[in-house]
Image (tube, rainbow, N blue to C red; front, side):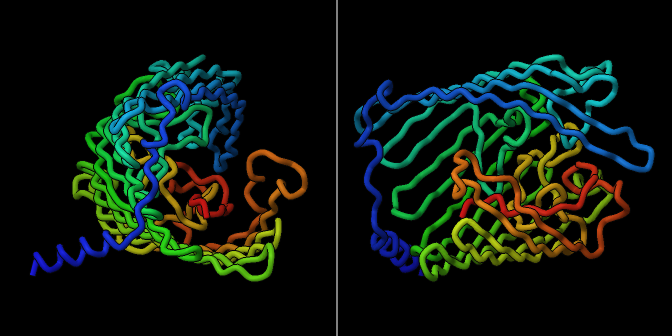
Length: 385
């Protein structure tokens, strides 16, 4: 029986079209390399209530990333590097230290760092369309997604495998042993090990899916399922249906440290109608189980340590709506400013309104990501569609 299943699986993979080899098209270590410089000036202010002190930080960041090409031949080798520097422009006088800002880590005396420098390197090798790398990693996967939404980048240390041997199929797997927080230059933030793997597949021009799982040592096991369907109509119009869901099971010791249960299932379903540069969207999100959806933060601060953006759900924006037994609805309108002659990055999050039922607690309650809620806004899903 096992032999028959293996032959069936092998025949299915053989029937799938193979992708053209990227390594055979390599132009060399130098010719395919590039250096990018990114400047970011960021300011975040959090307005708390019920007597809590407001928090605010302002800084200037400089991020240089180098990506080499691969040496020519059957097996190609390369090296990537990143250098980050941030200088604090404001955030003193007791205003630093908010988990939701995290520009500059506080020193032992309670003062935020005045500046910050971080460096990382990655060695990589490629065979055909499969890349194996070790070193500084910044994954952007639904099961582990390093946060790049603050002044400097969050990163991990470990090994990662990415394979695109079959057209439309991308397989990712990794083993990380270290997490470097956004606001600090040290590498040990308490993560023991994080193992993950999964794949995404473009079935046809309209339908795609993704399935991932992770094991965070002494923290939890987590699974993710994502499905996306696009139905084009006339020119410039289409309907997009997007499903995202997580299932989590906390380690008993970690659950006890949070004084909560162990299981959570959270999912969202969004429908978007795109008409030229306009997007009209409605979404529903639901969390159930004996605890909320836990993600992000740092292990030495009681967090999960799987990346500050590891919540690919429709209603997660300023608030995540990820508490125990929490439900939320969204109605939003988005405008693509690129269609108005304003090129660059996509416009700001769409103007939207969200209604929630059974919020965790009053306005000062903490979400399970470790951030204190100070607003109730909504967002579009992080996954690119």
